[in-house]
Image (cartoon, rainbow, N blue to C red; front, side, top):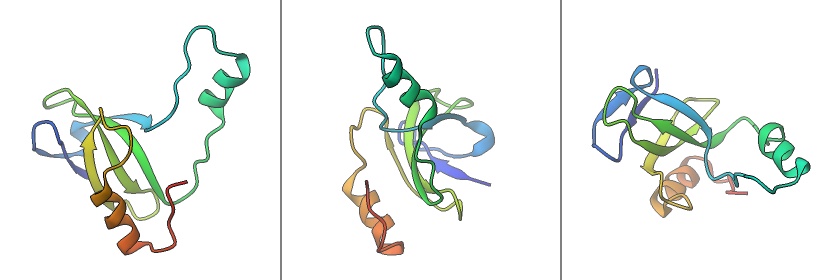
Amino acid sequence: MLTFRCPCCGIDACETELAPGGEAHLKRFGPGSTDEDFEGYLFLRHNAKGVHFERWRHAMGCGKWFLAARCTATLEVFGTYSAQTLEPPKDIIDAIRAKRPDWSLT
């Protein structure tokens, strides 16, 4: 079972208290975008096995959105951080690289 620490309220919450929101740090497209842009956003994802940055909502707690870094193969959680953050924090990147030296952010 996954357990995340909500960075908004500081509570450790298991995945049954949370709602997944998909991949984090995506460029979202709105009105006026091309069909190709929208198709890429909806369907063309990298989705490789390994570390992913995801959006989660503390549904049974404070109700706020946050971001998390976790490995899809091992379910290891590397950390959580505010949804207003544009890039993953350095301490989370360092934690990932300490366990997976060959990993890159690209």
